[in-house]
Image (cartoon, rainbow, N blue to C red; front, side):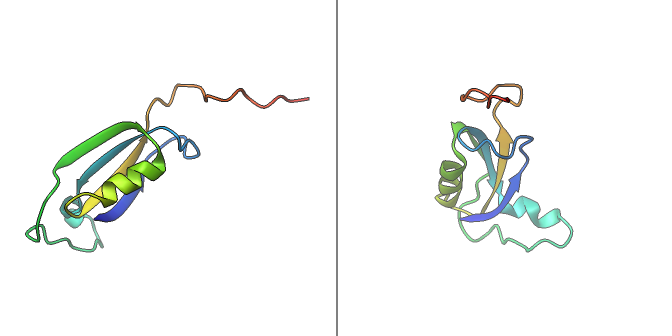
Length: 90
């Protein structure tokens, strides 16, 4: 179950291809003012990642995990150029 999302992309409008990482939401228990997750309630995902998936697929993937997870989104390659050509300026 997806408990939280941290969008750490420098290019937040690039949604087609991202790096998605999930970790157990119980790791967030140390954060100030966090909701607490009881890690003894089933499966605990330590770490998993998928590169090159869309934001939508990353959310669906995280939601399908067997335990409570936090999803982190990163740029795949912040130096790459978009697939589409830039808009022409006149």
